Amino acid sequence: MDSSIDILLIGNLTVDLTASGPMLGGTVSYAAPTYAAFGHRVGLLTSAAYNESLLKHLLPFGKLSLLPAETSLTYENVYSERGRQQYVRATARDIRYSDVPVGWLGAPYVHLGPLSHEVNASEMAAKFPQARLMLTLQGLMRRWDAGGKVLFKRWFDADALKRIDIVVYSEEDVRHAPEYTDEARRVCQHLIVTNGRAGGTYYHAGGAMRYDSLEVQPRDLTGAGDVFAACLLGALPLLAGDVAKAVRLAGKLAAYSVTRSSVESAPTAREIQQEMANVR
Image (tube, rainbow, N blue to C red; front, side):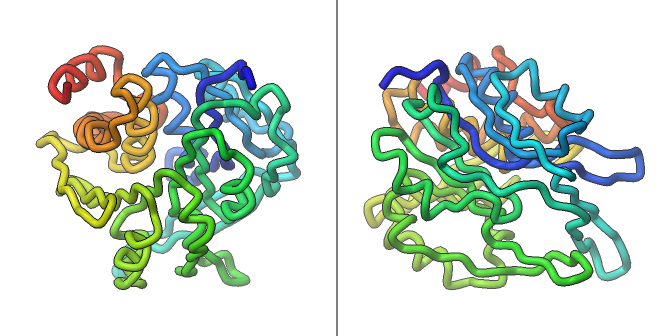
């Protein structure tokens, strides 16, 4: 099936409440400009408040299909002597397969980027058998109490994980379940566990490959994992589908992202060309 896009990106953007005011956030908000930097035609399926002003920041990076809601998914980080605690202040709509525009169903690459269980990964895993499908897992590992306090929730669907080509999460995402990676590597086709400036590990076919990052002076660590994942998937068509090379490339490009903030975290065309040449 032909498609008007190369990469279908599914997940809710977030409104992050900060001391400087509301900021655009969420996996899709970092991934969309990253895919655009690689030259891909991006289709972004998200839900937000019908009058959400932050949506305008995503419009330059692809086609947008909005599921209007009363509120946008809203997060707030509260800091104390005990560290950071995250809260959910509002939610948007869930996203189902039936919400995908018909013209996007044939996209060759699909990125599931849930932030609050809004994407049913088990359903989606069965619906794109011809696409290269990637899941960034963090949003499935969260729940929140009546006051909005974000807590850990273990999600493990072996059947879904087997169907998904690439699964990405950070060591921080599963720190409350230290056994998770040993279980996941047995069922995932390609599993990447990131560890910030220390790089991370790529698991495939019973083996493990460490990858490195770059030494940079960080400005803002927010979104680095999302940029990493988008660089990985976005590079695959340019690297003949070689996941190991794409992982090494993504590790380098994600380092550049922490020297900038918000949608500017995406790699530049020059950075992509430079690190692509090194990987090849």
